[in-house]
Image (cartoon, rainbow, N blue to C red; front, top):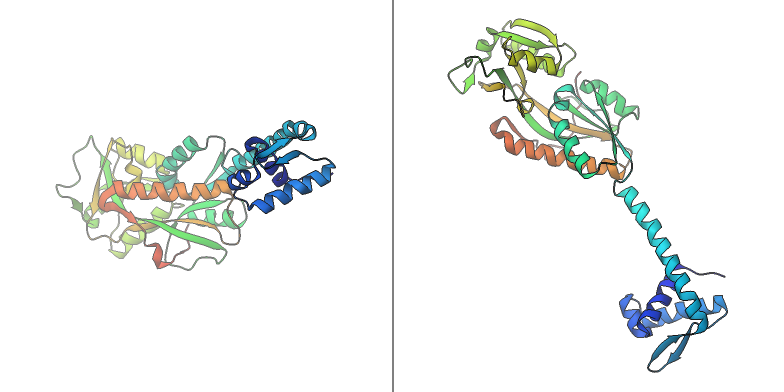
Length: 321
C-alpha cells in the first residue's frame, strides 16, 4: 500500500466539505488533479472511499474507517514539521561569538540581552580576546562570528567582514572629580599631561593610543599601567586618573564623564566577521541580525561619537592584536 500526504490531505478535505470541486478550491488544486489523487488512493487501498453523486460525495464504510487514521497521520506529519521548524526557529542550537574586551562590556552585553530574551533555549558561548586572536579562532572553526576592530590592511580571504560602526575614542574621568576641561573637547597634549590609567599592551586600544601620542611627539603620564577594561573603568571612577576609551563603554556608567578629543583621528571601526565559505545556521543568522540592529541602536543613541560604518566601502579589513 502506497499513500502520500497529498493524497491524504485531499481525502480529508473532500470528506469535510463533501464536494470535490470545493475541496480542490480550498487546496488550491485543479479539480482533475484532486480527483486523480483520490482515485489513485482508492486503487492503492483496493476500496472506494466516496459515494459520488451529483449533489455531493459521502464517505463509504472504507472511507469512514480511513478518516480518523488519515487525520492522525496528517497531525503526526504536522508535528514533525513543527519540531523541525522549532529547531530552525531557534528552539535549540548554539552560537559561538568572539569579541574584543571593550566590546564585551558594551555591544555584546546589549546583544546577548536582546538575543537571550527572544531565544532563551539557544546556548551562547563567548570568547574574549584581541582581534587577531579572534580571527585565528574563527579560521580554525572555533567561532561562528567575531566582533573585531579593524585597520586598513587586507583581510584573509577566508573571512567575510562587515563594518558596523565607526566610533570615536573619548577621554573619560571620574564624575566625582572636577572636569578635565571647561570646553567640549580636549587636546591630546592636555591629555598627555594628566595621570592616565593605561590598558594592557595586549589591547588594540593601547596600540592605537600609543601611536597617536608618538605621532604628536608626546609622552603620556601613566598613573596605572597594564589594566584590563573593567579595571580601567573602575580605577577612573575612583579618581586614579583619566583614560582614553571607546565611547560605547560609557553605556550605563553614571560614575564617569566623557569629553571628545579635539581634532583627533582616534577612531576605530567595529566589524562583524564570519567564515566566507560556510553558510550560517539559523541561530547564527539571527545573531547576525541582532548584532546589526543593536549596533544601529547604539549609534543612534551615541550622537556624534559614533556612526554607522559605510558598508558600501566594501568591506573587510583585517585586525591588529
